[in-house]
Length: 198
Image 1: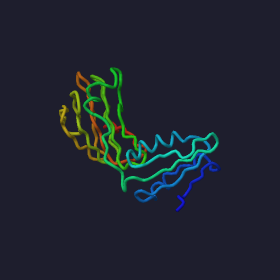
Image 2: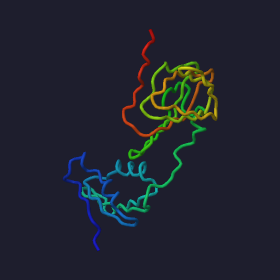
Image 3: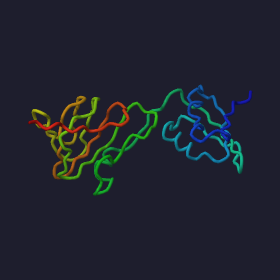
Image 4: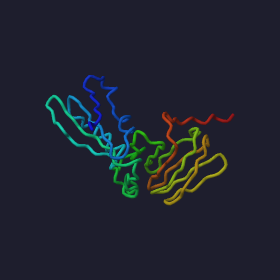
């Protein structure tokens, strides 16, 4: 039986993405991608979004026609180790780094996760959080989180729940502060300033 083919040579570049075809495959099913160049960037995307879940076999290698058999090896995304948070938190990101020093890369994820590092003595001014709940896990350093009515001490191992729209201010201690943050995926999260009381 002939395998289905997906010839993308005459398709506009933004419309060439074959992930939908891959999603429709059953385990051990495949299709042949035909392109006018080696789709290395596509292979990189598969490695990020589907590590261990696909087979990638070159059947013809150019120069004008490339054929790759793409096979589905698993019925669902596989669990994977993303990073070593302790290595990141211990300063592997460089002495001047600040902000997100690691983030979840998978394009089809339902979560957002970041490792945030604050320089010693720095602070995130008072603000209202986004319209979603956020979980924090303190990895390294010390600091404090000021709420509307109290101050919470932050140290390695502490797990915090920040309810949606909660007001807070964060201050890093003398060693800085590094924490993992996890929440449901939502594009365009912004920090809203807290109105000044009169």
